Amino acid sequence: MENLVASDRFQRFYNCSFYDYESVPRMARKNMLVGIILLMLYAVFEILYLPCLAVFARRENIRESCYKLMLFMGILSMINIHSSGLIIGVYAIRLYCAESLTAVILALNRCIEMWDNRIVRILFDGHRMYCWMASVLLYGFVLGTFTIPPLPNGMLVGWFWNPHIAYVDDKEGVVIYF
Figure 1 (spheres, rainbow, N blue to C red):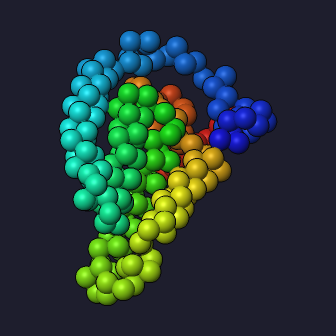
Figure 2: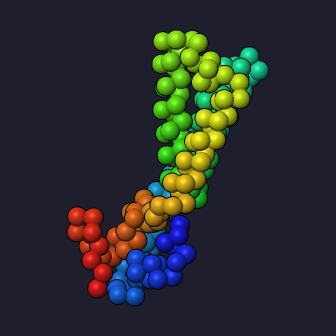
């Protein structure tokens, strides 16, 4: 994010004065069909998540560390779907990484549970679970704050680190600025 705030870096990487952005017509910069499909999928997936989260949050389930992790991952996923399906902003990359790390911790939790129940209690029982969750949130925050964020591109319906990708050739991941 600092690259978007620091004016000299912003001008170096995001200044588009070296080409005519009107060379691509305004209607070609929009992708209505894909946008409508994303909005519909967003609504469907958000609705489908609610009963799953309700099951994870039941009193008899929430006592188990794996259900806490699945509830946490489900909430992160719902926020991520909101970001990528509705907002398509830089937050989704943070949440995608945080959700992926939570999946790794859940896999670790399940493997340790099968191997030795005492170790899983030492690492995951009680308030220790919240330390794991806090570390995931810290990881997502640091990743999203101190890395160069990708920017949404409506023409290509995706996020790209090259903000000029539809206008200027991208030679093997290196943008040549004039």
